Image 1 (tube, rainbow, N blue to C red):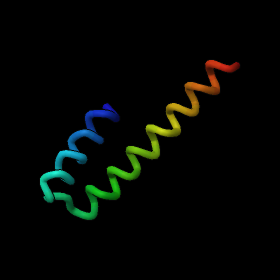
Image 2 (image 1 turned 45 degrees about the vertical axis):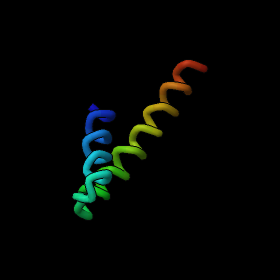
Image 3 (image 1 turned 90 degrees about the vertical axis):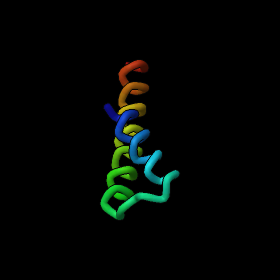
Image 4 (image 1 turned 120 degrees about the vertical axis):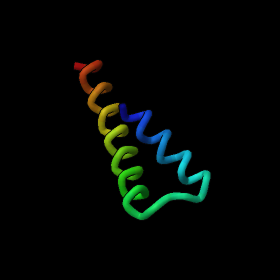
Length: 46
């Protein structure tokens, strides 16, 4: 789901058709993806 959402927003950036709400959503999705990776790494170490 995360990659799909970021991919769609990224495509809209490439097309020059990105609204400010979409840009904020893209930033949030990227941040959440980073947190998911950190959590997975922490679980792997535990």
